[in-house]
Image 1 (spheres, rainbow, N blue to C red):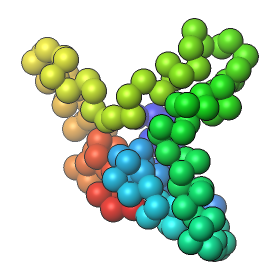
Image 2: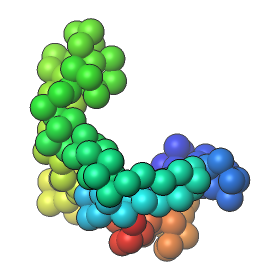
Image 3: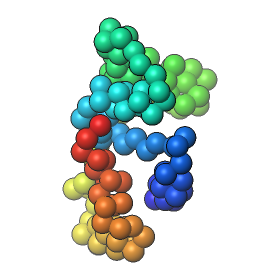
Image 4: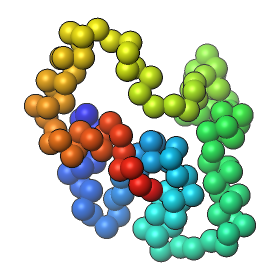
Length: 126
C-alpha cells in the first residue's frame, strides 16, 4: 500500500503512469497502446503484435532468466518460479475471516473506495 500511495501522490505528473497487472491480463494490446500514447510513440500492427507476444506471461515465464529480477544470476531458487501462475487474487479464500476483517479495516482506513478498487482490480480498461 505504501508503494501505491507514493505512486498515487505523483500520478498527475506527465512522466508518471500507473499500470495494473489485472488490466494487462485483460487487455495487453490496450495497455501497450496506452503506454505508447503516453510516450508519444507508435508502432505498426506487426510490431505491436510482436511486442505483445514478447510481454505475454507465457513468454516471460519461458524466458525467466531474462525477465525475472536478477534473472540468470541464481538470486531465486528458480527464475521461472518468479512467474508462478499469471493470475490475480490468489490469496482470496486462503485467509481467515479475522485476517480478512483486519485487511478490510486497514484498506478502508487508508484508501478511498476508488483507490482501493483500482489497487485490487485495476481500472477494468486498458
